[in-house]
Length: 113
Image (cartoon, rainbow, N blue to C red; front, side, top):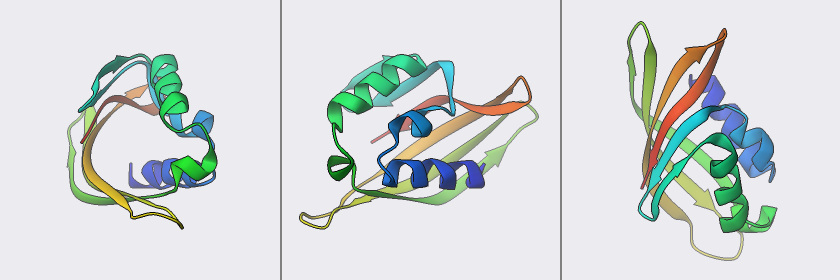
């Protein structure tokens, strides 16, 4: 899972939201202080609206603080940091839950704050 999150952070840092969101399940649920977003397409649309350019996205770093595994799922709690060349960094935490579907791990829940 950590390698998947590293690839996701790299895609974000390149400004590639399509690649960043490709790991979300079709029916993923994203929870943030601004509300609940349901479905990969809607999560992607939300990110594109909030981060319209690569410069607005900044460089993402995910630092895991806890990983839990069961037979059906893996959850990762992590600190996220967005760094920008021209303004202060933004930071918060996230909990991401992965489930295996069709031999692939997909994000089914993402709670970021």
